[in-house]
Amino acid sequence: MGGMKHVLTLVLLPLAPILASCAKPVAGESTVGALPFAVQPMGKFDEPWAIAFLPGDAPAALVTERGGKLLLWREGGETRTVSGTPKVAYRGQGGLGDVALAPDFATSGTVYLSWAEEGFGDTRGAAVGRARLVVDGTPRLENLQVIWRQQPKVTGDGHYSHRIAFSPDGAYLFVSSGERQKFSPAQDLDSNLGKIVRLQLDGSPAAGNPFAARGGVSQEVWSYGHRNVLGLKFDRQGRLWDLEHGPRGGDELNLVRPGANYGWPLVSDGDHYDGRSIPRNYTRPDLARPAISWNPVIAPGDMIFYRGNLFPAWRDHVLIAGLASEALVDVKIDGDTAREVARHAFGARLRDIAQREDGSVWVLEDGPGARLLKLSPRAAKATATP
Image 1 (cartoon, rainbow, N blue to C red):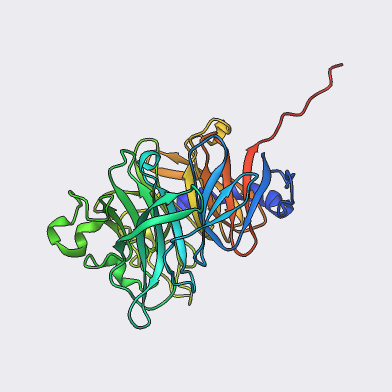
Image 2: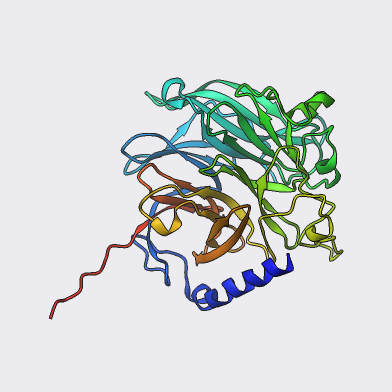
């Protein structure tokens, strides 16, 4: 891993002048620093967490706000509140989380949501539910049903993770389940904390999971030893990747394999916040190592695999929305490993990222008054002929 860090250093050093010169985009089309794309503000939200674009020619999307609102946004139209959302535990990192369209959304209208919910006493945990989205008249969710929960609910307000992904064939639901800042549950197969779980679309354990023979909650587990997974996506080859926060250093992009142990809290390329060291990933060859790690952190919000045509240089790259890094991080996959190739500074924390059918890329800023930003290629400048 020392060699990988050296490569990262070489990649990042030339970016220092760009990072220093970039400022937050202004209203209208941005000319921020040396960004190789146009940035256009398209809406504002209060602590948004996730966005899911609806099919159709005119841009429209569902956006979650951590305080508990689900919003229906349409370009050039009024942003409307969708009723029927669950009660959420809005504190710390908790609240309304991910939103995803079901594989059969075109015919069923089904959407999936994740959120933090209260338990008994001073406990909380993530939940996933599904409902039918109705947009005629007053936007609303009908027949919301909870289909999965973190087990057990614990104290604290962090590391819910609760990102949602569907297998490319539409047959399975994958959910990232954070270890809730409790460390040891990530290595405990009798808990679904610190895991990625593979489920049927109704939330029941999928057949053929690697620990099914153990029974109980272990039947859900696809991989374990995870910390706080905020990105969960499939590549064009049908391989699952996760993006997770390390402690003080050690953010990771991982190729997720069934039954694999990703090491938290036994190893990390970062250290504890109180300064105590953690053995590095390379010291445990029996554990899965990240495709790439970052130290200092990028603090990822989410990621996509870009599959459009508007940005040919990005095709099949991982594009990461960075929180503490306040940047769009461009990562190229090389087989089972990865390397950062560029970092585009926005001067604002970026919470989520999505791609529309037309190939445009959209990012959501983080926090109060966060903007939805559309990225598109810059128009070629005309040159005078002699």
